[in-house]
Image 1 (cartoon, rainbow, N blue to C red):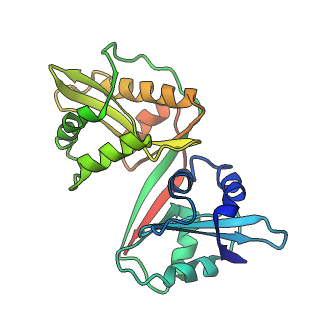
Image 2: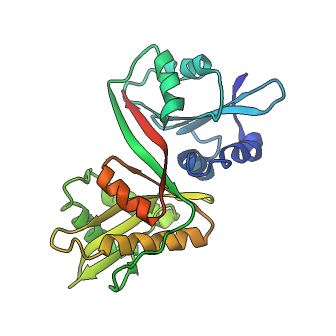
Length: 262
């Protein structure tokens, strides 16, 4: 049986998804931030005959995220997504789970992106740079944006500065950086932080400052802080060379994260 979840289901739903806090980073974060009664979000649960959870489907704005650790009603989940007639939507999740649903969707996605998904529960100590590492405040955002705009592989979009400000003020993002002469030259940051987990993003170093261990230093400092708070860490990557760096720090692959775009 699949039914919409309400605030009365919060405890049972969170108990189910927090069994895999890294895999369910977005579901946990969205429920903590918006609950079950906000108009930008809907949550459904599938239950077996004993009333135990089999799957959770969450819609945040135009993005559907699916989690099911074992067999689930693939067609029933697909039917819910099919009923949403919006053209610009996303269907995301761990590959083997979300791929089953996409196979049963009437309307197929126009584009598909796939990333390695890695998590870290303990950090491997590394010899790191002795440069001073600072935590950013909202006043540092223009300098951070300036750095990120110089990183070719980073996507830039309108409203990035305001979005980052909101995330920092809400406590779902934090940033550590190294600077030189007033310019920020390396960063590591989080997004979608919640009670149980956090995603690492924005790991970069300005050309001309590479191979000094700056990015590893920022990331190590950030990871140490998060792990000391009992949080599971995760990240996406699509570059195997970058993956090797993360693995040396203690990250391990847990699968592929698939994003289907309409």
